[in-house]
Image (cartoon, rainbow, N blue to C red; front, top):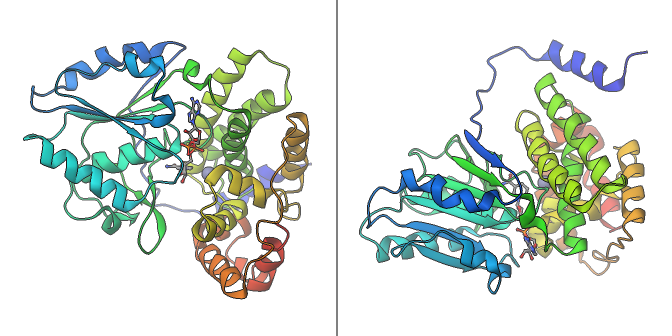
Length: 375
Ligand code: NAD
Ligand code: ZN
């Protein structure tokens, strides 16, 4: 008997005829424990002059750590410590860009982001906006960026979002939470040093790791699936199973989670995410719920959409003793529920990927409210 995924793949082949999307990829990547120490050598050829600094945007969780001393900053460079407590905002990007422009006579030679999805997204957005006019809010959407970004490097210190490979940078703007999706968004260079994941607290490790797991489930069970996404998605899923259910050493686990995040990100590049992400955007917009935990809060209730995925998710939670917060939506007003539902229903490509062109027949406001009420 044919596997469900193969049938989906055949289906999507029948329904898809070109033109096909032509995606940019990260052109250079270094992988290995300790590879962070090669950063100075990697950026050296990109230093254009003494007046064109390298701007390092670093998660402030590293404030008193030795990592700060290992940053290869030269006299004119700047290390900016930024909190990842809140998701990145367009106003924050605009403020960083104007400060840099005010303080230097030349454009930076490079922007380097060191941290999780929050810092990686900030670095991508700042690199784009240094070379494009106006507010970053004007570029939230698809292919609105005109000029190439400043050379930018991404160095993840927590794994799962796939922000290190993706073609987007998700920002909270005055009107919407939406990515700057463009061919200029992906990093020019990524440094994957699994040793940098060492200090991540257990729960955060799980939530961000589950973002990757949910990317795989949503991509592999979506109608947009093709052989490109499937090949990356299956590998990422296999790695997630080893990391979250297997019996492997800590160092193996770090290496594998880093590669799972990479493959998960590649998988959704050519497909799309699905129900959990569409609904978690609503939570995040209204309540500021962070991406990783928001996806988990929704995903636990999605057995009817992803039956096998939810069973495995529950096993992973149990194995790691994770208890998700409850009653998040308990005291919300009708207006608040409606705001979340509106944001969520607006994520059309995600629904279409999850349930096909007729998605709106199944996804009614009442349906979404009934799921939100369980959270
Ligand atoms: P994060 O960057 O928000 O960080 C989560 C927490 O982990 C923070 O408290 C941070 O300080 C801490 N942390 C990070 N590295 C650490 C380390 N080595 N040791 C100790 N603490 C550490 O986490 P995230 O889940 O990677 O990113 C979430 C963000 O990514 C959201 O803003 C989301 O919108 C974005 N995102 C972007 C994409 C994309 O493709 N661009 C995809 C998914 C999510
Ligand atoms: Zn995600």
